[in-house]
Image 1 (cartoon, protein in one colour):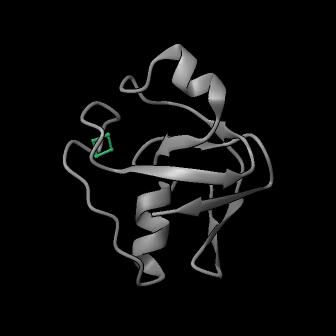
Image 2 (cartoon, rainbow, N blue to C red; image 1 turned 30 degrees about the vertical axis):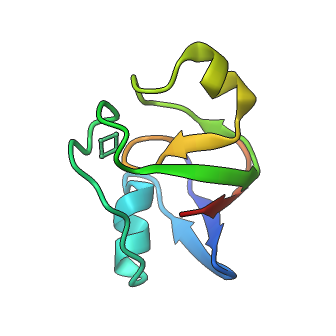
Length: 87
Ligand code: FES
């Protein structure tokens, strides 16, 4: 998908097309703990404070995905230009 911004701890990080949120944050010096990196295990789960995730994982239930208040950072992206998250 297209590039979007992630705001975490008052910092704004651009996530380019083709780079995961986890990798974009890592390049900005923000470490997210991961395990499977494939949307299966739930290790990279975070809280979503604002914006709508584009859920690409198989960990959250459909109901949890529809609530849009948490997401998996290794694989999911954004439907809105910006996501505000809490690690
Ligand atoms: Fe396993 Fe993201 S690292 S779901």
